Image 1 (cartoon, rainbow, N blue to C red):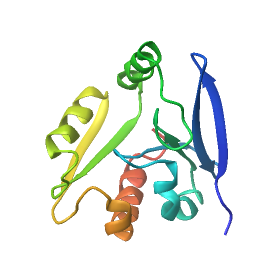
Image 2 (cartoon, rainbow, N blue to C red; image 1 turned 180 degrees about the horizontal axis):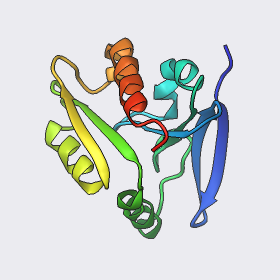
Image 3 (cartoon, helix red, strand yellow; image 1 turned 90 degrees about the vertical axis):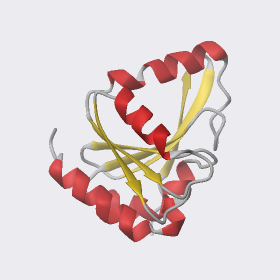
Image 4 (cartoon, helix red, strand yellow; image 1 turned 180 degrees about the vertical axis):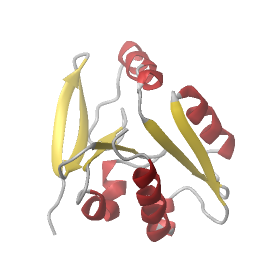
Length: 146
């Protein structure tokens, strides 16, 4: 099994990292609190068959540096300008991030939907990777090519 490539870039004089694998349309995978790009390991193989799957390490997570206040503001200010469909998912049993945050994130993006899943906590990639993979593939199929 091929492992995703580890990548780094310097943004505002600080290092951000991500992992990527595959070719095709770009697919950005964002981890939750306490995760990293490695959280997406179970889904890299299936998703990279049809997509350039890229999972970033948020500032201060994984191999990304903690950004200073200015760089953090710049990176998060860019999110609402993303002009692509987005799926934001939260577990209803998540003790770390309330489901209301799912709606707040989705509302901040131009074209996003929010789903909350009963019986799922904070680590859905570990709790039910098959359900997550199926839901992502369904979402991606409906939004193929823009």
